[in-house]
Image (cartoon, rainbow over all chains, first blue to last red; front, side, top):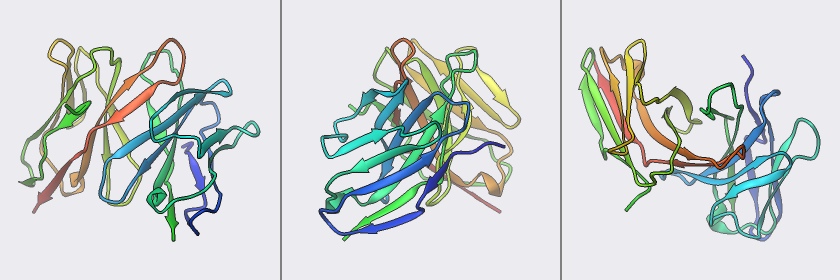
Length: 116
Length: 113
């Protein structure tokens, strides 16, 4: 069964450093998403992406964040200058319009980002 | 008011019980509705989409009432393996763009032997 993969599974970085989180969505999917989940809190939408551009973004997704699809398979989230409060689990998801407007999203296993 | 509001829980039920989760959403422009389950420290996994006509998958039944902006999930004959946090998710998309999904806080279910 196809699945979304994410690397690394755990990233430790120092405050102020740049990090890039990587995702490989399911191969025939067209829509891509990033979410974060701070420990003990709800899943929060960050950004959605389609046709090589951002579709929607939340207020969390400020100028420190960017997304890119550098090639036909990867989808990345970059945080330019990490803060302590960026420590969270980051989930990538992808979905495909499958003849119904369901937009079912399938999630990767997540990258746990720890900022020290 | 929260965009997506779920029963606060937790729910602790014996095996074999029937349990119902409720969810309301505030944005009437919402178009797609889902239930996910999330096990501790794992990714959300899609349980089922929710349609206005209602849909059933084995022991799970989901209902949507657009007029009341209300979504429900019923689990019958609950199993120990159903223990998880259940997430109500609402999606809004404009045209063919990827849209935005809003998650509820989740309702935790523990099924006991």
